[in-house]
Image 1 (tube, helix red, strand yellow):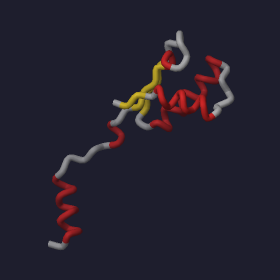
Image 2 (cartoon, rainbow, N blue to C red):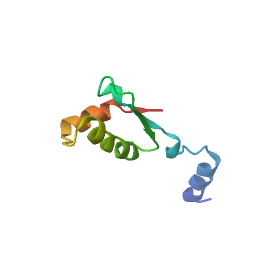
Image 3 (cartoon, helix red, strand yellow):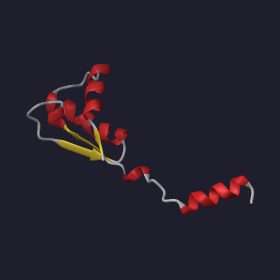
Length: 79
């Protein structure tokens, strides 16, 4: 068979890594000591969509500087 068909067949025979199976999580206390809030989502973007309103409401952080974003992203865990 042509190489493209062979690749397709191999792809069908191999387990497929499901990106949605990856979980991104953040314990707010890793960024803001004393905060017990935790977040999890299937993508980093979805996780950040939960964290941003929390930062504004619970911690009065509305200015998301590159340093703040970097600090939060560094605290995100993947499992």
